[in-house]
Image (cartoon, rainbow, N blue to C red; front, side, top):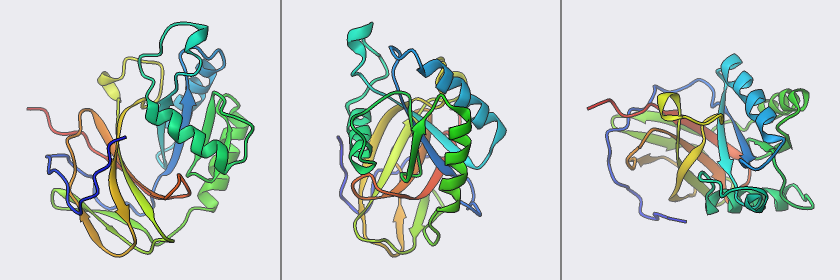
Length: 220
């Protein structure tokens, strides 16, 4: 996994929405094209995405069901690494699909709409305050207090006409923009190939402290 540990990063013309009053709840779905229960999870999260503007949904494809069918073209090693960390954090017996994780603090099967809505509500009630991501010129200003080492993730995902799958915001690339120990820092952004988001998360794939969807770059 690519890690950039410098304080500043490659500058790119990625547009960033103005500061939000409240960070959206991050919903992560771990899925596979060879998972029979995953289509219902995709449909459930499409409904959530259309009904709510206070969530950011990302779909991470994993490859451990490839032996049941063909190779999943969207699967990434980073997806498997991320899910395995959540398995340890939630003390699960092992990874499963379709698993959904909410702000890094709640998890449930993504094909059960009632459980999904309950997990969203609980995660929003437990959402931490005090960490902010705010547009500053061509970059993003991160400020607040960190409970120890914190990671900044930059995620590329498909949306709109770029997304020809049945998934909500399938992730295509993730980059670690280095550690953060709290305070105020300016982040300049790598190139965004479709749609992108910043995730501020306690190290070890812990609680998500802030999330900021980024507008796609303007058409040439």
